[in-house]
Amino acid sequence: MAKILEKAVKDGMKEGKCIMGTKQAITSVKNSKLIVLSNSIPQDALEKIRGAAKNGKVSTIDFNGSSVELGKLCGVQYRVSTLSLSSMNESDLKSILKESKREVE
Image 1 (cartoon, rainbow, N blue to C red):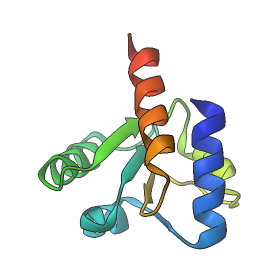
Image 2 (cartoon, rainbow, N blue to C red):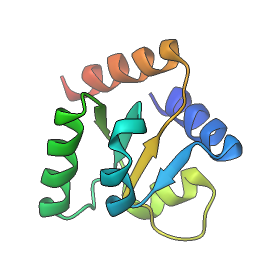
Image 3 (cartoon, rainbow, N blue to C red):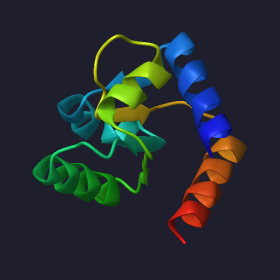
Image 4 (cartoon, helix red, strand yellow):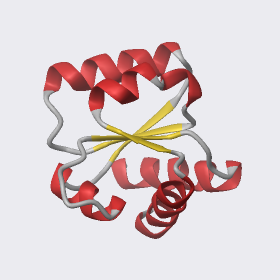
């Protein structure tokens, strides 16, 4: 998953199609295709985002790393606990979700 997700995040950052931050991700759920959650997000925020994503029928995946690592993946010098991708290729989305399910099992 790392390579496909990394490519999708970098493409999204380059095109300006990524929204970083928990509050921003919640408000942008209806425009999102995928929400990436770091493993260091607070539990209450995690529940809010998952609830909003479920209501908006948006997929979420758990990033196997901290908010610092997700920030590095985005190419920024600060922590990113939540990342919302609003534009991505359908085949990439399916590949990321499929790989994410495999990692959980």
